[in-house]
Amino acid sequence: MGSIGPTYEIPPYERPPPTKENLDWAPLVTIDVSHFDEPGEKQRLAAQLEDTICNVGFWIVTGHGIPDEEVKRMLAIGNAFFKLPMEEKVKVPIDLGNDLNWGYREPTRALGDSGWKESVETYELHKDIPALNDVKDADLIKAYKSEWAPFMKKMYERIARPLYILIAIILELPEDYFTSRIEWQKRSECWLRFMLHPPRPDDYYEASRKFGISGHSDQSSITMLWPQNVAALQMLTQGGEWKWVKPVPGGVTINAGELMSHVTKGYVKATVHRVYTPPKDQRDCDRLGLIYFSLFNDDTKILPAPSPKLLRLGLMTEEEMERGKNPPPVTPTSVEYTRSRMRSRHHIKEFKQRDGNHSYVYKGLEAKSNYD
Ligand SMILES: [Fe+2]
Image (cartoon, rainbow, N blue to C red; front, side, top):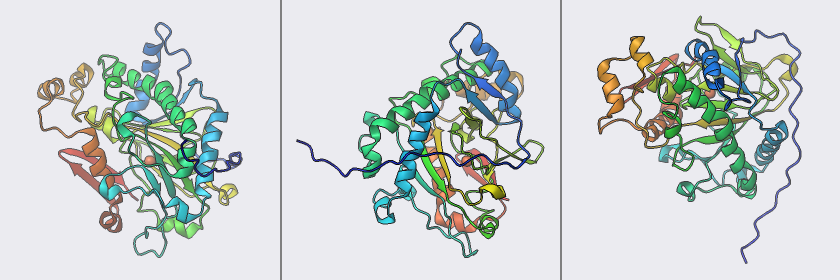
């Protein structure tokens, strides 16, 4: 008989009510994937999505068929974890310095010399596949694996896959160009994140402007965010304005990340976004998030996709087109980029030195973040 682990109560979770303030919301396109497999539908959705991926970088997906009850249950599990005593939460720590991108990140880092400590907490969950069997899970997380693991896979199947197909169609690539690079059973550094921003005083938000919760692009290929009613997410428009991103009931907010931008020569925008001070009627609320960062398979070579459209638009050369078809042996892979970027983003030295605009280059792959 196997040993029985500790048991944990999971109280139900309800989101705080939406803000009553009239914020300057970004107008975002909604992609309804409920008829995705019907004839002509992919082409229709691709046409609807194209301007958004080039000029906005954020959009909403509906019609995925994942009920909000399941989402709230996931949030309840995350909430129960964050409410555990600190000595239990730190038992399975994330260790970015040693390339371990799953586990708990405690709120201990100093925000420069501001006197404040970063107060965000995260727990990163991994894909439940044989290749990741040796990843350790916290006891509470392990106890509910039979719920979060299929939930994560469902997000991959019902939200991520259709979007990767649409982006391939837009780029005039074979429909499976990207889906063959995000196969579920293959090892990748993907993570599903529980994230908690507790209420904080205004001074904290001022002090944190140059750090992680301020302007940044995601390093993912795409990011999928379930609705968080506490308004705080803002995106930087192509015109240089910060606009609020409105949570849509039943919808998932999507943004493209740096990996997708790299392989499309910047055609798909990894839009800069930030967590801003919530409106007054929500300042006292916990802001609990559930976010899936989708990444290519670890061994995917990160180089321009051989897209006839990018060639026609002058965004890639014939030589790059050829390299895309026959990658040279020394090409950065998705896992190399991800780990290097993680270290860059979170290394204490780099974290302390952040000052204004920040740029990052790894084997010719350049990313810019705007921490102002
Ligand atoms: Fe982000």
